[in-house]
Length: 411
Ligand code: HEM
Image (tube, rainbow, N blue to C red; front, side, top):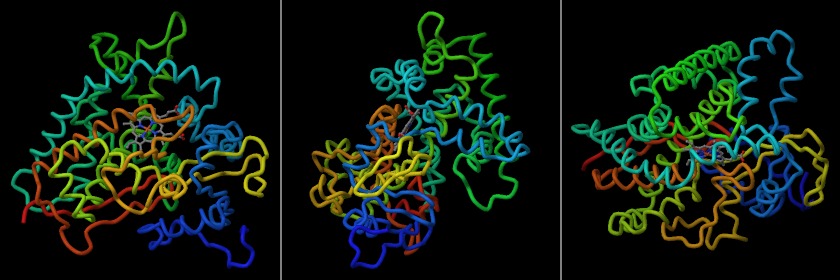
């Protein structure tokens, strides 16, 4: 299917290694020639223009509820294995449309309010400095495993009163759950694994809640437990589901932001020089890191009501990929969109989403990004690529980021 019938059809294969390394060329073609593209490989629509992505996210023709139709089609044995995980995922506000979404979102607003996030700044600085200190004496590191992964993990664990030495367990449980949530292919026994991870995580958070109630301490967890008014409180299951959501929504995304920030700066030495010489560019630099090769490659929706877009008929139940990293390079909105410019202004990227589901953690993510990248480069101003083949992108359609990034800390 294609708008311009004289050209050969555009083949978009997100799993192709060349596309993974640089998806931006094919996004350019799709935006120009086939902005509402049907992908047989994905069995889904792929929407690439800024205004269309924005309109979908702020409109009412799509739903975020992808779980119910999936679960209804499962054979009874598999449905039983996944019963608990689906119960908790169904409580995520990320998978709910208004009005149930509106209630949950209202409850969570206090805990995520901007002044409270600003109060966390000294804690984030201390975490970043602590992780940087652990690198002392080393010449080469994997920037992802040794830095970018640890900072957001410790921030979220501290928010949820999870001791830092639980990181290994949490990583295992969330990796297990991700075999289902991330829709991983080729993972043997993936539903049982996901169910085991969910069971362990739920059990652990139930204990955290009991301990907190026995001995309450002020902070994010306390704000979440006490959110709501009168009789309308978050139930224990809603709280546990939300803690798991925060862990998923706030960890890998922020790791990916920190990872591609350093990559962008190392790939553009003039911008690195500017970043080092002028601390005042930090805020606009983080916005450019979020836009240029941001952590939200795509968002997923299902069509709720049949409608047409650019002459295509989107039928109820069909899946839609909204390509955020394509929208963020749309020349209709951004001047010289392929230029990496850490002073870019305005910079209305869509990396935190749009509409009712706009990221709740965006202040926190920005704060983490600013502190982590600035402090790392202050401590290691001569950081360079470790060699010619020093990074790999994650093999995934929705998140975007590096799974490995070998860097040399000093000349
Ligand atoms: C750079 C880091 C981050 C990026 C790029 C990011 C991006 C996003 C995006 C695009 C959405 C909307 C999803 C949709 O519409 O389907 C979202 C939702 C959400 N994010 Fe983030 N996020 C980041 C960090 C965080 C952090 C640190 C937290 C919390 C600790 C967080 C919590 C949430 C929550 C709770 C939602 C669901 C909001 C809702 O459905 O109403 N995020 N995020």
